[in-house]
Image (cartoon, rainbow, N blue to C red; front, side, top):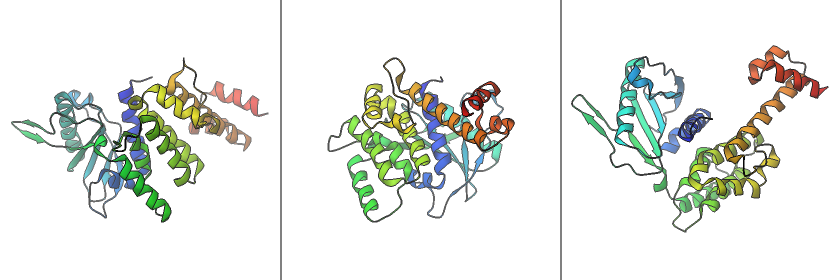
Length: 280
């Protein structure tokens, strides 16, 4: 498996891809009527920027670009890397770009300057956000049948609790809120995966494992039961794998062609043939 930083980056970009326009509200950027209109190419050829490759950047309805990064601890080297990538994206698409960096730790610097360039991204420190106040706001929205921004739930455990809520309590609260705010079962399961996977590093594997087990998430076929030797990441991987195989079985039962099942699920021919025998 890729290192945790890469996986966090993947979760970040996947979640912003899924929630698109809600992401702008979560970030607190853009005009009221501004939305994400497209996912842009990131095929930058310069070797120096290739190291900063980000697999998803967005175009907003106002014609500007949005480059989002996750970085747990922002160093000067990170700022230089992001500045190079910011410049590369601007040249590639010939539009103005805004770079937003999410972190749970305050950086020593918030900009990088060279003789030819001033790079000052928007840095959002999630630990500066108030967990307790956010919960009050969400409860109010639930009572008044107002829509909840699911991105808030995914990052909620990283917010600071002035009331002293523990890591376990914050993570468990975020999962509990998905049950009361998200009716679509498939969507709720996907968000639960994002919540656990993104926050596992910060609350610790033992805390994340306890939440998964106490809330019986593995019984929902989102996660398998996690043994000490497997760890939370393998539990998540196994849960996703089972979900894909379940989809493949349903497609086969509905008479879908094997080649179509391979294309839609990404499973190998050998595995699909095995599933086909199991479905008989």
